Length: 264
Image (cartoon, rainbow, N blue to C red; front, top):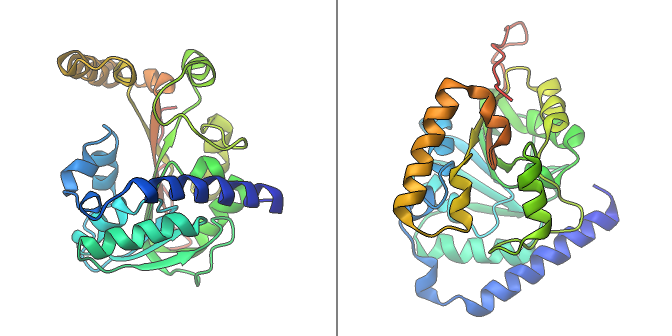
């Protein structure tokens, strides 16, 4: 990441964190696991892909507000949370304290991680990869991930041209983003696959992405059911989804032959 982009990213997220800090009150930091895991349809299955977390060394890469760090710790993980933004790290520290969990917090650049080789058994990231130069970030993820380790990332997807138009032209909650970030695309998956040949990817929210603008819960639930049917019978529909969950596995031995998988 260039110095200019690094500066812009840090400044943007520090300002965002400062706005949140002014609005948050101590009770706002408390939350249940389910309120985080169910706030988007991909979060719970992505967490499940991490497997049993008891006593596992887990990196929350780009931890932001720290809710994932708390859930990871509640599941028994030894959590290290890192973020480029000191403002967001302060919020994550406050949230961990209020929820009575332990974690180590570090300011870092995801393309130059300040951790030793093989430091983590699991890596979690939500909406973080698309901020990086993936040629560099993929090598860093591979370096700090222990043999046999798993990294799981939830990322906005760029395969739907109508969704790309809506992202550019329509107002919606949470639209704010930095000038340099773009949703993940096929080229990005290819860069990750060059380092992690066994990459797996699953799309989420095809029709149900309309829940961003349609608030009728029963309608969104019906659309989510249709999504499951469509994707089960025709996996290629995933290329038009709103988000993808990307699972990276580091082989336990150099001579292992990974099983490649992916539908996009």
